[in-house]
Image (cartoon, rainbow, N blue to C red; front, side):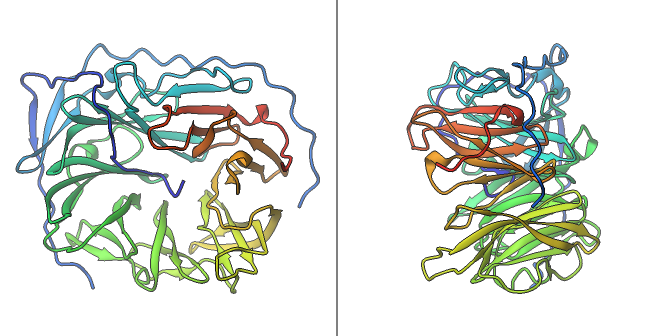
Length: 440
């Protein structure tokens, strides 16, 4: 998984019906002004076998909700739930049919649907997990639910699924979340509006935070969105990074993000971390309004994006890269994150049986690394005390995506890995239930 974003590409034909209330309240957004663009430790014994766990019962939601209409642009209207908790938890977890002890799973296809109609991303920061679940409804319409991992939604929005008005992607960070709305589509390029708020119920969710107009940002192809320092940041395919300055009412560029093929942005507090693709790649970081600087000193043959959780960072580093992007050696590295942000005390954790670069995920002092072959699954590495465990899918299935990882569990989507294959399932697996890592 490249980052915590979710793009609206749904094929569902028949899902649970939804009808907006007959007399919704109406709120018209004050659109922001459209300004011109700016050009290795000893091993500890494995923990004891974990007893099966029951799904956490959700709190009882209110009986119902009304909806408020938010007009993004003429002809593009969204419905925002006044009481999002009334919609219930975004996912219903049950015991896994063929997973390890304590494994919980949720379907990606509801009973009424003819195709998978649920997609999820998660963000783990400081032991707290936030989910963004996208449901495809009849109409055709879509719904985003933002909620804690085992709680009720703090925000819900519905919108059409149309080329002229559609809910787009979502980005999660420890600073908050951003939801994209795509509208005014012409010639393959569209304008975009953004909703932004903290990871909890807040009045900020009920207004448009920024608009990126198609006519002023020609040929813009959005790659991801994220919240950084209370601001909307957008990542264009290949760069540059832009952020919306609400005080100046204009979009600003992250200085230095045009110095290569920018990718893989993530937000951490008031800073954005990204990579400049090339040979070799260059991990970068910047506080908004400041020039980007290199995160990793020295030159290596190649590196993955740097993943940060609080005061710790991890990444993969390769040596002996050939013209086909194969490496003689790849290893997992870690460092402390200090003010700047910058990396300090960089050190190698362990060598990996990889020949091509992978992007790790990181949370709670635990790293998830997709391995080379489909059957190898995911290596789970705890940094302190150091240990490695193996996460592999059942026979004829594969780990399609790591959703989040914490100090005690990893969540993944498991499926066939093929278009039109059997619907996948979402799984939460206790780390204590995974076997020690052993290369196949």
